[in-house]
Length: 274
Image (cartoon, rainbow, N blue to C red; front, side, top):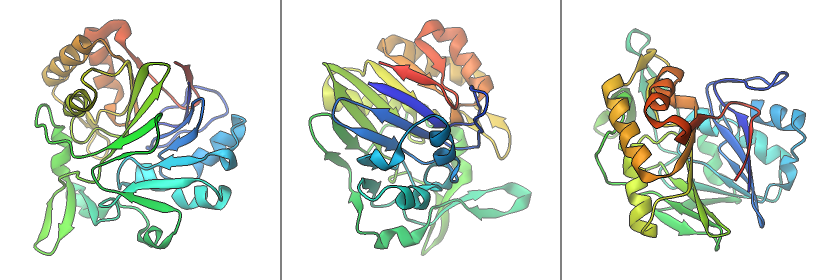
């Protein structure tokens, strides 16, 4: 299995650009998968520079309904005419962020996507085949990111703190090993891992994604003591972690202090072979 970071908040390879967003290209024995598209068309520009043919992708997954993960979907649709696109049914809802003095800003994705016939709307879980599986419905409450309090959904009663029912996670099974891919882990990476364990009666061998331990708009990090507690839990799972995006550099460094070689940063342009 090969994973290549098309977009992340930092650039690890000269000649590639970065943005606040996440996009991963994943190649398995049977599939070519695009997981999220970042905030713009940059993922496609970087893919071209990296020699990746996005027209050959057969499956696209959107982790949740925020622009920094789904802002490039229309670009992907223009490049690729074959892939099925899996989006949680709540991802096209009214998603906003409280920017303090700057006010409340829309951070959702293009609502016109609902009309596209290639999009498959997922509820709580979906088994695509013996390699790919999606799950949402994470109910745990341990170490939920404090930054969620500034992320809102608009309802008939007004703005409420987002419940992130629209967040889904990808499981990839290959050669007896499991990879868990999370977009931002708004439901808390520990709770997502707990749900994985409920589904598979084991922990994943690998986990890739953002852990939402940094709010870039306010440049506010999760309490370092809490990050250390999360790191202890993650280390005990025995899983190997690759993170970036909304984890934030300082929080990553704190995780690294506790977890050592069990966690590494994945920047734009970097490649993993698992």
